[in-house]
Amino acid sequence: MLNQAMRDLQLRNQLQLEAALDRRDIPAALDEAMRYALLNGGKRLRALLVYAAGEMVDANTDCLDAVAAAVEAIHCYSLIHDDLPAMDDDDLRRGQATVHIKYDEATAILVGDALNTLAFEIICSAESTLSDRQARLISLELASSAGAVGMVGGQMLDIGATQKQLERGELENIHQRKTGALIKASVLCGAHCAETLTAEKNQSLINFADNLGLAFQVVDDILDIESSTHQLGKPSGSDQALGKSTYPALIGLDESKRLAENLYKAAIASLDTIGDNTEALRHLAKLILRRDH
Image 1 (cartoon, rainbow, N blue to C red):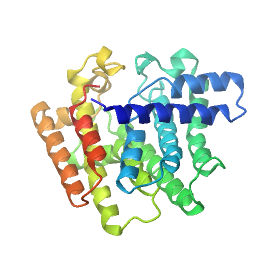
Image 2 (image 1 turned 90 degrees about the vertical axis):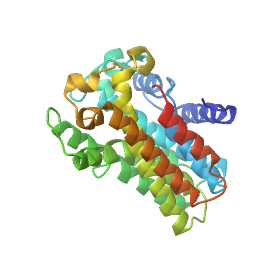
Image 3 (image 1 turned 45 degrees about the vertical axis):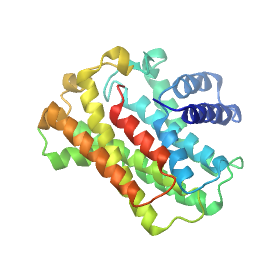
C-alpha cells in the first residue's frame, strides 16, 4: 500500500500535469482527449520512482516535478498507442474506455503524439527549474528509453514475436526494451536532478532499475492470468488471446513467480551498495512485486 507521502506525490504529479496542459493553447477537441487520457488516475509508479530516486540523492523537489510529469506523459502516450486496433486492440484502460473507443482512432494517434512531445516541452520549458545540463541529459535519457532502441523497438519486437515461441533471452530483450527502458529512465532521470551523481551510485541504480523493470513485466504477465478485468482495469487474459509471448507461457506460472521474487531481491541488493536514503525505492520495489493490478 502507498504511504501518505507517496499519495501526496501522486497528487502533486496530477497537479503538475494539469498545469502543463493549462499553460498551452491546445485545440479544444484535442485538449479534452488529452485530459481524458492523462488525468484519469493510474498508479503513477514511474513518477513515484522519479521522486524516490531524487530523494535518494537529495534532489530539489521542484526539479523532480518536471521529470515526473514528463515521464508520465510518455507512459500515457505509449498506453494510448498500445491500445490501438493496429496494436493490442484493447477497449478498456484504467477501468474506462480507451481513447480510440471514447473518441476515434485519429484522435487517439494525435493524443499520443501530443503527449510524447509534451514531455520534452515540460523538461525544456521556462517553468522547469532544471539546469541546461540537466535538461539535455534527461531529455536524451527519455528519448532513448522511449525510442527505437527502447520502448518503440520493444513494441516492434513484441509484434514480431506474436504466435511464436521465443527463447528466454529473446523474451527478456523485448521486455527490457518495451517495459524496462522507461522504468530505468524514471529512476536515472530522478537521480540526474541532483548536480552530482557518482559513477558508483549511477551503476547501482542501473542494476536496480534493470532488475525492477524486468520484475515489473514478469508480474504483469502473471496478473494477466490471475487477476480479473475489474482488478486490472483492462481486459484480463488478453496476452493469451493475442498469442503474446509471456513468461508463464515460456517457463510456467510457478517458475515465473520465483523469477519475479529473485529479480526483486537482486534489485534490493543493488540498493544495499548505495546505503542511505533508499527507503522509498525499496518500498516501491515491494509494491511492484506484490501489486494486484
